[in-house]
Image 1 (cartoon, rainbow, N blue to C red):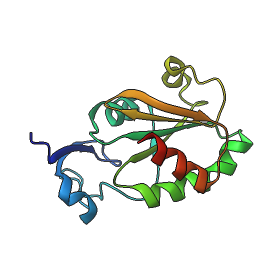
Image 2 (image 1 turned 135 degrees about the vertical axis):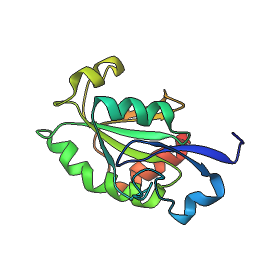
Image 3 (image 1 turned 120 degrees about the horizontal axis):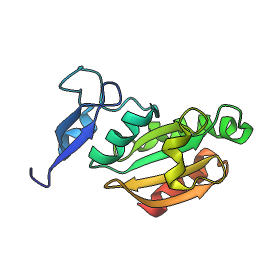
Length: 145
C-alpha cells in the first residue's frame, strides 16, 4: 500500500476499503455495500464496529462517548453532527452509547459524559469532557490534529 492509499472503514457495513487520498473529497462509495463512505453523520457504534472503526481506519476517529439519559450529551449532539458535516472526510465521527455498551467504554476510563476521544492508529491521541457547541468542537479538533 502506498502513502497515497488509505484504509477507510464503511460506516454502513464496516468493510475496510482502500481509497486513494486524492479521492476522499470525491465522495467515494464502499466497494462492498456501495453506500457512501462518508455521510456527514456520526456512525453509531457497537462492540464489533467500535473495534473495526478504530483498528482499521487510516484517518483519525473521533468518538463521542454518551448516554441517552444524559442532558448535556443530548445538548451537544446537534453540534457534534454538524462538526461531522464540516470535517469529514479528514476525520471519522462516531458515537458510542455507554449505557448500551459499558464494556466497550470501560477500558478507556470514561468518568463523565459526554467525552470526546480522538483515536489515531487505534490509540487515544486526545480527549476532552463536557458538552461543547459546534465552534468549540471544531476548534478543539483542529488543535489536536
